Length: 182
Image (cartoon, rainbow, N blue to C red; front, top):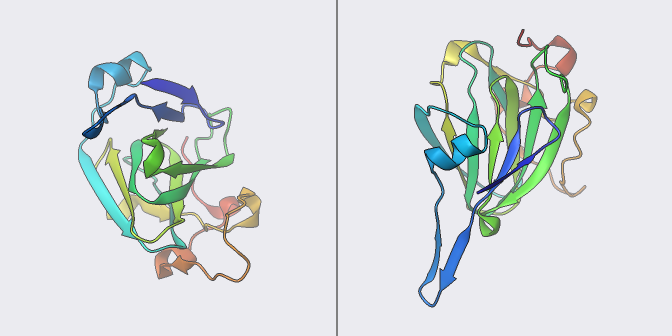
């Protein structure tokens, strides 16, 4: 496994070795020792799976207490993944990045606790799996407005497409009024 730092403090792209032969391929998707070698000594408490239609936006979600670190992997399809740093003491506070991730690459993303997270499904039948470091707590969940201009996110949505967005995500908070982490 190789870890590459992203432009959010502590966020990583994890590239896995892929072994191919006449049968197909094999990828080790989770190895506690390898993650520790990359500087991530983690305890995961929950696994989640989402299935999305093309042009579905999910997020940008975070919890103001019990922040969740997320290990994100695309099982089928492709996504444009977005991370927003909401940690006041971080050198990348209020910085947002987007990165393409696909099932074909077998890569994973590490999103540190204290960051909002979301993605755009770029294909039908896009399945995203993510391990989290703390339990989901509805009372602490918050949503940033996915298309807030202050985030500077250039979502790769064609001009003639109206994305599929849940009512909760459409009513997200603007960056300037969202609660942050200390």
